[in-house]
Length: 333
Image (cartoon, rainbow, N blue to C red; front, side, top):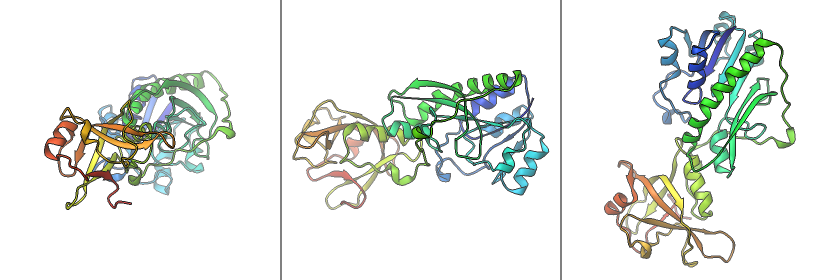
């Protein structure tokens, strides 16, 4: 079988490596054009060895059209005469014209338990929404966004991983399911399960603005946001100190603290009287229910603007907190 792989980043790389080691003829790899960096292109995709580099090592032609649906992109694909497309986190929606080229269609390796979380950011959205499990679904691609029939599916629990860490767990599952699906297709026609439209949820792209922490949310929700926003756009906040310019800080690691604090404290207020250990940074957040005491988030790792990533202890040595200091948006509400 002549296969073309389309994908970007560490979620796609294990599938590419599996195809290269498999029995079929990988005739080409499509990946996103070279850009300066993951964050500069506003992508949630992590880059490992790189699709381009992995393919080139094996002598497989690499194609990087700005749009695979352009006349040039379609011509590149048609020239390879593929039997099957295998797509994983490619970052482009394929047109009907492109999907019609392979004789046996196209399959997509998608990082969610469809029909939940159709779209570009399924892993981050699952964490953000407090899901307890996620997984990988192999679908037969159609014109709709992640709307095709499901050919294979496998689930795993969500623990306390960041989106990047969870995606790394899902990637090898996706590669294995993809190869199993291809083997089934070679053995004869296969049918899949239609997605229940009543259960469809969306997972649109993340935005930089989604990283801003709202300390008036419950502690669990704040900590999920910190995990979901990694590797991009990262969760962030501003430290407001009387008489000083607000200090932007990326929050890399935070946990819910299992006690409550004075209900009179405003969300975002550092709880200084708890800092018996100089390395501990506690911040008041919302009450879980109206009338309850304030929840608490403990910050473990962060990065103030212009500085390196550091522990809370290192941060507090450089930025000792005082009465009146508070975390929040750049312009206080």
